[in-house]
Amino acid sequence: MLMKLGQLFRGFLLPILASTLVLTIPTSVDNTTHQRISLRDAATVGVAQTVRRFHFATFHELEATARRPTTDADRLTDVRLIFKGNADFQRIIVPMETWGNWGVPFFASAEEWPLDEDAVLPYRLNLDIKDADAKMKRAGYTGSYHAVDVQAFSEHGDRPQPWWIFLMVGLRPTRVWVGDRDGQVVPEDDFDLRGVGGRNGSLNVAR
Image (tube, rainbow, N blue to C red):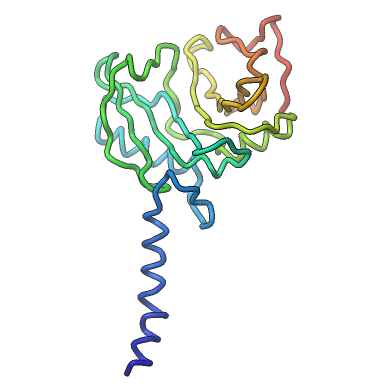
């Protein structure tokens, strides 16, 4: 009887318990040892859920941070989606509780989360964070970073490109920008919010 119970535990209950523990790992922990949904797919789900709940919300920013500087995109496990609410001064922040699972939204003011230059982001991004990280490294920017933001800017026209913005650690460049649509990799000094041209009218970019 005891042997049968042991077999039942190992064969049925233990896998369920293990999967439950994986799903409840907090996002502040580097939970990179298990198969997980991509950040792009997780964000798509989170945006759809939020807009269904707050039909007036518009998606403006994705933020992902790590507990310490890293060169591994999987370590950016503290993730937030930022929306504008039903008034220009209202923000809706949706944190990721466990990887791929979004928590309870909370409200903030424009002073706490200014989005003055931010255009509306698409529900689904073209790149995943791992794609953007790989493009940045192929362009020669292999240093550590502590956060990545995804934003688009109204100065870039009616349908501006989203940018993956890597906040680098150490000396210049302090940021590296990766285009979500065209894959351009642009160091901070060559990026101009007024358009796709750099300070001298052209970009020193890689793809």
